[in-house]
Length: 337
Image 1 (cartoon, rainbow, N blue to C red):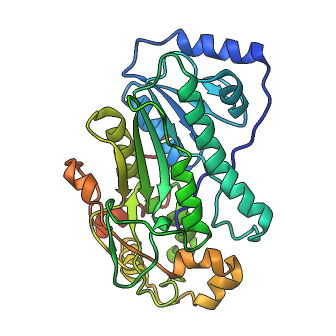
Image 2 (cartoon, helix red, strand yellow):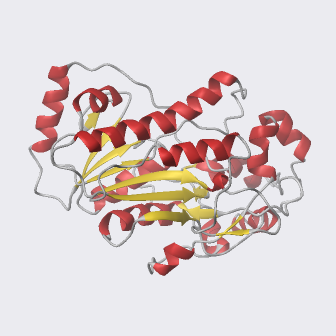
């Protein structure tokens, strides 16, 4: 499933370093389309989105554990607020949930929560304190907020009940953390499906077994798999920044509804390989635990109705074109899109 972004640490950086960084960032203000403050900018989605922003002429400041050029730390944001000239704030930060090398312990659960909720809350508070506020605050969330079902259909206007598991509770609290007191700042929440891209996420994990003809469906394969190509996810993030009429919840999924088995066939076909070796549910649960395993063995039928209403244009609206776009053996991290 979608590989979520790396854990965000809180590292202390001195005030002098912070001020130097801010002066450096501000010195080029006014020469770009805008100035985007990006949390989680070094992960799978964040790296690709940063590439797109710079390609479009935006100034980008990354919030990172490691200080450097065009970077600030989460400590800086918490203690010093937003750098000057920021026109948009985007948070893509989050600890990877589906890491098979890490046991699903209470400690990992807490890291998963903190890396999403605390970072989002820090940005919301920084926006609230800013004298000159950004025009928009864009946050990522997940389709795990919708209850898995073989029959139910969900769109952005679907009524959410109380949380039914860890992931739904996480998603609801994650979205609540992004609430802003100032109605003049647009807030956009993108509930992401599985993000498909060669440089990371699920495709990067599945590529070796599928390339050697060892791939197959997960569990029954009948579970729905809401998905979106990395290019469309990045374009949707940019679309949310640049279109002032866009606000509220958007389902970050492709318009084509598919099952895991349909994805498996499309990806294997894109690689010109067979896909005859299924991954049984009990092995998934053994590797990840029942709570995490449900991400792969259960699914939801999620529709991007509001995205389509805003006339967003998908580059990869169907799974065949999307998997073909992820089939190259070699890829460049410097040019992820």
